[in-house]
Length: 258
Ligand code: NAD
Image (tube, rainbow, N blue to C red; front, side, top):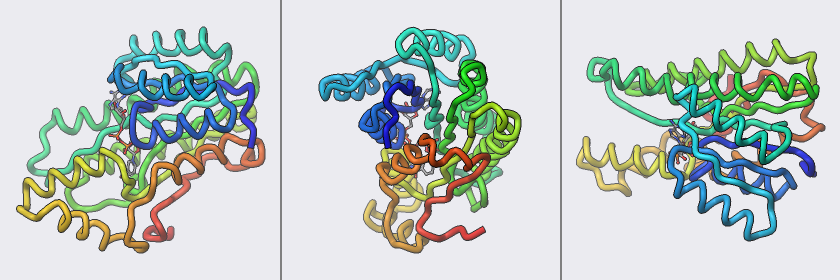
């Protein structure tokens, strides 16, 4: 798969899934702008890629802030000339029983996961429409297609991402652009490690016991790797996946079969 001559923006690119996506897109030949709020994290990834001879830049951005997103889109255009690929991976997790979730928790989840995806897509889609080629890939979650106790806010925000994905996919279908979502189960990243630490703090289980309890709910008894998610993203970016549009690509080892 060659993505030579493609310019890509990856939000949440400083670590976890976003970092793996940035590496895989660069490996496939794309020029990559890596975004997140934490400047140090994105600089490490951009430096790593540049040192390996890839074209990569770090551009700080808070995806919940329209001004910051506009500035990021302008900076990305200057570096890349065209933004052909947008991967919305910036996100946050939060779990609590619904009666303990504050309005602030709820608003923050929707702002980062749903509004962030909307703002970045809105900022970068017009250029794709103009050039009649583009790929928007939203890193949603199996929680975009199912619910579970204690994740009502997170699941609501990811359902919003999937509804947005499906709708924009139809809007731009005739413009050479596809908009899809990758929906992983538990992935081996800092986000999952932080969730496990919260389980440890609230239940008294050891970290290993908490991990074993989570793995027990997965069909393959393992965490998905960030590289597996990145491989799906790279595939969706290729011309051979041009007919795949508005789809949630579920990657959870077979738990969700709908
Ligand atoms: P992570 O916590 O390791 O990384 C998240 C990234 O998003 C970080 O770089 C962080 O700085 C960035 N970010 C957070 N808020 C931001 C903001 N307001 N503006 C800009 N950047 C911001 O998480 P991850 O595991 O790599 O998750 C990436 C995406 O995949 C998220 O949307 C998450 O919901 C989703 N996901 C994760 C899992 C999992 O088990 N880890 C499973 C399914 C879906």
